[in-house]
Length: 116
Image 1: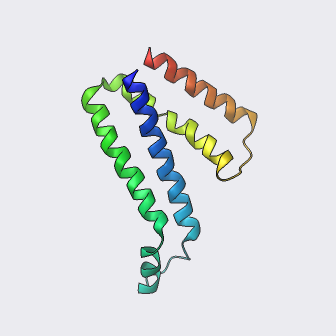
Image 2 (image 1 turned 90 degrees about the horizontal axis):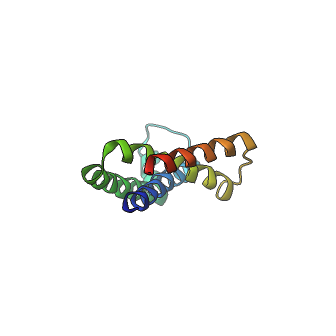
């Protein structure tokens, strides 16, 4: 049960990092090799949020790998796909077809069986 809770937290952190990355990229101007471009990115706080989410997720992942069997831990990070689909709907207001929701249900079923 502890592995499942940690895997869910780690997957939420991975998904959050991706959401923050998308926000950072949406706010970013067209790329150029000018100092003004790079300076503008220093005030784009979405980059910081992205880095914190990824960094925290990476540290948690190291803890998971150290303390749990790889064959059980690794498949559970696919839960990040489930959270990503939910974020697509709730945060980015995307329309998701039924076939993708079926895929999400299959991922969740697979995680259930791996966790057993």
